[in-house]
Image 1 (cartoon, one colour):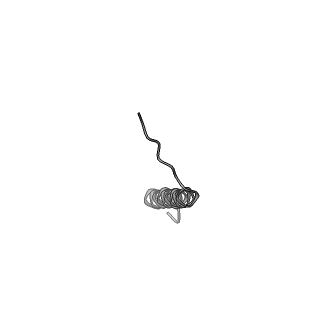
Image 2: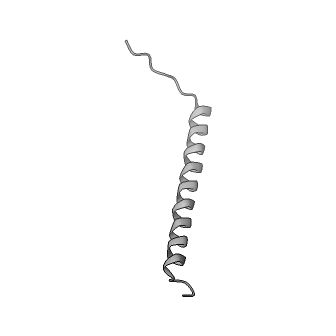
Length: 46
């Protein structure tokens, strides 16, 4: 028999907030790498 784990509303909210924060950090890193790539290629002020 498999016992299911009960997740409280507080835990759901905490997990959701953490996921949103991780998503924002990842999006920020993608944007940063994009800008660095454009600058290295010489697309800005080249």
